Structures are given as structure tokens and as C-alpha cells.
Amino acid sequence: MAQNISRTVDYLRQQFDQSEYMSKNPADKKYRLEHTMRVANIGRQIAKGEGLDEEALVIGCLLHDLSYVGTFTSDDDWLNHGRNAAKMARPFLETLDLSQEKVEEICYGIAIHVDDEADFPGERSPLALSIGDCDNIDRFDAYRIHETLKNRAFTDLSCDEQVEYVTNVLERLNKYIDMQMGTETATTLWKERIAFQIEFFNRLQAQLEASVFF
Image (cartoon, rainbow, N blue to C red):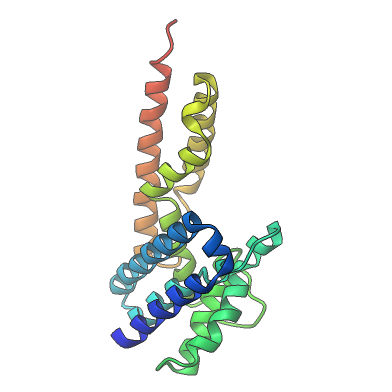
């Protein structure tokens, strides 16, 4: 197991190092690699909690955003990045000590992780679904709060604009908290992350409201 995962990490780093886009955008490279490692560690946690194939899930998580080594020029590039990543990952996966069945399961999970659609047939197995679950769980963890507020230039907004922004975020989060993931372990992790964000933004909203004299 360790050798397959080690080879996958080496391959991933090599692809990022050779990417023209990533060479020109070191901040994106840093974020994408760090995000990928966090997703893989969530995969390890879910695999242990559910008795899934830990090696396969970790490898799928490591390769889920492989297509980001290319340059995205349109919304379609983002929408298709799971399917494109699966195409890119397949030749490498077939060099690992994995059964063809496992290769197919990993590729299908990578392909569907963006919009739940693949361009080839496959089974929506717990492992395949978990690749997208791991991605989503990381996207709603603590780091994403920092990233989102920074990219939104939150501190440069007026107080009224900040309150409006936080109110909208809380509305979305309260809709997301009851979403069901592919496994019980993933659902538990998801609810924990969303609850944390709701608590953070509720506190932020209270501070913003207390920042105005009436």
C-alpha cells in the first residue's frame, strides 16, 4: 500500500512541477497541492471509519484535481475538470499494483466529483462517492473561511456590505448542513465542518452588528 501511495505523491508533484501554468502561478500551485493533501488525509479518515480500501481512496483523492496542471480558460474547463482528471490519471493508475476493477472505481470517483457525472459507465460505490465527499469536506473547513474572506477583500468592505455578505453566507450554510454524503463517516465530518462555519459566521455577524452605534 505504501509504495502505491508514495508513487502517486511523486507523480502528482512531478506533474505540478512540470506544469507551465503552475510555474507561472506559484500561489495556486501551493494551494492546490495543500488542498490535495488535506483531501487525501480526509480520505484516509473516511476509509478507516467505513472499512473502505484506504489505499484506493487516498490515491483517488491525491489525483482528483490532476487536471489543474492545465490552464482553465472557461467555466466549462472547471465543470469538466473531474472528467479530465480521470482521463489523465488512468494511464498512471494502470502502472500501479492495482486491479483493473480498482482502477475503474478510482477513475469513476474522480470523474464524478465535480457535478456527479462521468463520461463513461461506472458504479456509484461508497469509495467512488467518497472522493467527492472528501473534496467538499475540505472546501468547507477552517482554511476555506480564511481563503474566502481574503479573496472577497472582506476587510475592505463597508460594515453594511460585510453584514450583507455574512448574512448570505449563513443562509447558504444553513441549507447545506443537512446534506447527506456517501457514507455515515463523511456525513458526520460534513456536519461538523458546516456547524463550525455557522458558529464562526454567527459570531462574526454579532461582532459586525456591535460595531455600529445606534
